[in-house]
Length: 201
Image (cartoon, rainbow, N blue to C red):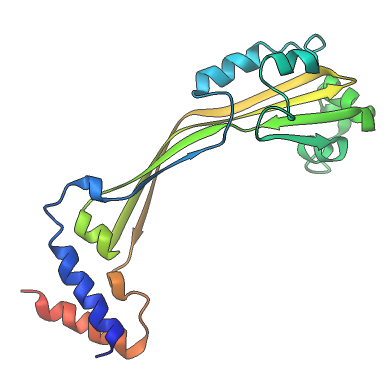
């Protein structure tokens, strides 16, 4: 039996003693795109305050929205805007909102600001022993995400678009029948599987 197999068996024996441990042993993580907003509602309210053909870049800056001051605002040119609104030939320029058409027709005078704030927490849940050994890992993701698109011509917002998911709740489960031996090859994997079967009643 190789050292690698012995090491895996040792991990198996140690992890089996974790069954009575608290769930806080399992890892968790937080994923957030740095923005001025802590909640979905805050981001949505900020979007509602933007008025097409009235709100200027200076107004946006005063609201805390400006690519030179606010992290993670992507600035795109009219070609990238065209790819977003005309993803395929079946969609024609004439089918778009007049404000979008005006922006695209303005070419270099047209630009877009895209902000995609999100806050997602990922927690591993389930049986501690099975998780630590890699037999069965279940991750629950929760939080929110949104996207704000602003089209600007000559320093004034002429079009805005909002989309988002107020409540994100996703579950990912990864099952490996051989657990820590799943990635072992050939004879080592067979020996490990045999060792596991030998310990079963």
